[in-house]
Image 1 (cartoon, rainbow, N blue to C red):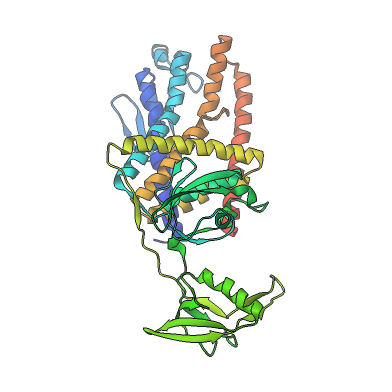
Image 2: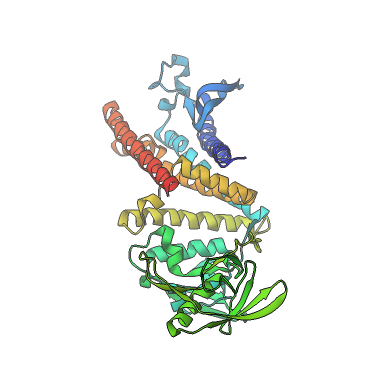
Length: 452
């Protein structure tokens, strides 16, 4: 399946699941409150499939799979016969109307917990949080190659994904955080990482590089893939050679080579290489050449490019039993709720770029396709996060959204009578403008992401 078709398909599946649960929440509580539901539609536009239930509700799957709705009997939307008024939404008490409106976001919250539970029971394959290369803030904090990250602050990090997000969160806050590790000798240690040392102007996309931690599974083996013509290595080394050591220093990752090239280049000395070629060990000497392209600072290079590394095998799994998965799902939902609100706060305070907080259908589709390729558990984790986002977004006090309707009903409770039609119409126009602005920003961010 192509990237485009895969992205489109998994986006449709995600929207279908999330919208169906959201609208079913409205439907279920409306029926408990004796409100007549005229139509339950997944999607908009021309119906592709329709069935009428025993209670008179039309169940519809429509042509445009980008949302859905529940249409209830309501005098504000059409004529209601005298004997049906008790079943009309607008004739219910304020409390009943609030319950019906809040049921959609609540359904998404329940779905989020259920999806996280399923993800934990199935088990999400991942990489062990083992440090491969250290630089920058991480090196200044005393982290070393071979350290296993156990916790970042109060966040447990059983896999690299949890470790990465916890580190990114701490980096955005630019403060100190304690990192619990187990070193290569299996000794428990605590390191304090001070992210105030990070360079100014670093955004979310650059934060992990600025942190200076490369996980073990992203190390590039020191195997030569290409040799630049007329370079120091062109007549001595061969494609496929594995570099074992330079000047007696073991080479475990391609990134180990550059500092040694700089050291020997500054000394004007030849660097002794120990290499492995077709099973045999050889020792050769190379003098690095000064490289200056006028675009970046001058550097010393051997003229080597690494071979493309094989895809790393996942060596960890995030899994709980069915019972233990319940509190784990609740903890994860609570944690991600806090992260969402913190992200909004960082965006408003300028700590986080708006492009890193708002994503539209293109961004969601690309993420859905990527997660689906990693397996069912990964896709469920994305659905859970999207369901939680949908619940929170819908509770924002913006007219048109569920939160806006709840705001109207709260005002009605306080003043003892409904808002005027004129005030509600004005609110809807404001809400529509805000929603269109948010959608425009999301599409702009999507296009920027595609361009980049």
